[in-house]
Length: 68
Image 1 (cartoon, one colour):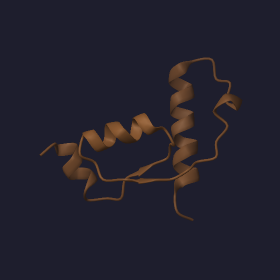
Image 2 (tube, rainbow, N blue to C red; image 1 turned 90 degrees about the horizontal axis):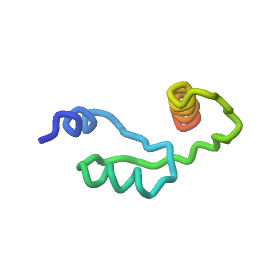
Image 3 (cartoon, rainbow, N blue to C red; image 1 turned 45 degrees about the vertical axis):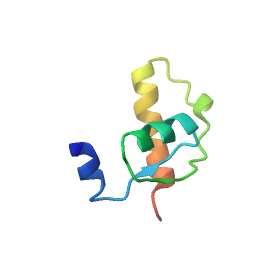
């Protein structure tokens, strides 16, 4: 078994994206997950460097999808 899948089965994995492709990739790799809509305006971030944009967006989505 993929060690990442085994580790993920120990916790609740949440995909904070409505991307069908991301969901398909996770399913193809054997991950069980829930999907949560994170109402984040990705265009509003306006960060010039892709690395900063991705890290910031991931943090915002994680916080938005986390249980209260």
